[in-house]
Length: 606
Ligand code: F6R
Image (cartoon, rainbow, N blue to C red; front, side, top):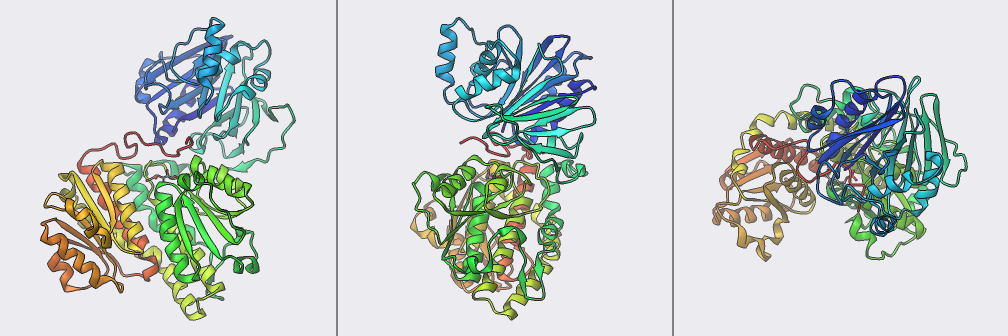
């Protein structure tokens, strides 16, 4: 979604802002712009389309050591030059870049127009520039007066021609992070834009506003009370934000997954008691034993990871566990029970619907754990306890390594909860060993890449593909279909194989490749019957299996033989095979793999 970068210091701001925008590109955007402050004058450059177009519009040298930049993902108004941020007031006194949505923008716009203000864009954000510009006083005081009138969400950065080296940023529901440099200050909506300049960061909280100059920063609440802020170290290393020699971030992130699993597991396996050690849950074993039910919430791939997690925990802890899309959950006035443990899963830790669901649960007195990748993110800070994934920064819009890391965390949690209840030390030990061996199994799966890539031509001519699986393999099928549609734009659907006869079989023909998950479990023979049904209708079949059954080869056009692992961990391995299939299909189709159309990395609006 939209991204913000701001700078004040002794260097020329434009190259720093442009580099910041480039680092924010992965979040998805359709226009970009920067505003510079120099000698009491604000100048703005904006462009619909890629940052390269914005670069072309800039003069060769741009003066200004203080400025703001923005990548916009259109919500109010088409992606045009005019609608791109920063926005200014009519007098060019203020420039502002805004993430979020102003729900009462229409009312505010009508009031301003009645006062004679003319607008140059269709955006909700422009009202901010006019309201701030009309205030007679300092920019920080303008913020304190104007922001309480805003209904909705904002992460914003503004400059004022009357305050030569000052940037003011504010946050309500949309992240803003300050970066502390040596004689310079930065701010951004995302750590990736700060990583090249500083390791020291400060997270702004909702309702806070910060004034930054090259000499430092001051954070206060909107009603001018000083806020005590802790400085934290930026997570990940700079190299994590690069492609590392791969053509796409997505490819790098898929190939990194053995290391990711290793990091997620690191220090968490307890061989002495054959369990997992998860430090941040903030729940004593007795409290964990009192849990009667678990509800997992997330969006998109995090939701599908949650479905796999529900299966893992239910199998080992023998507790009823279910996963639900966070947005649906919160809008059905959910019953929040004291003996239910709620788990919010999110890579970014900023997904609006997941955050809103967790706030609703906590408001009703429920206990929420987070499974989060982004350290210090809003979800990570608002949950009662949790587990960091340690997957490292995920840059490509489509989630791969974070999804795999989520599954790994769920396996650890399932083991830990299982060992408190139903799982014997012997079985616990076998699971610990299986987890220890998982990074190598991931490496073996990645070694299948050339074979999997050779199957991509079967998909790229299809209008529609079906992903089929049962029980634990069904969420994997959902995620496989999700990956394919996101990055290749091939329509893909996932179904439990058992549901085929109840409707979708009508669509199966020689034009609908079917990717069938066939784990070597007690349902294998039933899944083979499904395979027969599909074959009879002439559909091309790719089987994904760890089983060695002669019928699989007979009934499939192609077989991806994935390594055998402990059945509970099979989704991790099968998921990676499907990621490779989607990636190579998208490569063949020459898609914009890291930034698929219409998608954004972290969905911070509803
Ligand atoms: C899919 C994808 C999205 C995210 C979803 C949740 O590849 O990336 O479906 O999984 O938007 O995002 P997080 O995990 O950041 O809450």
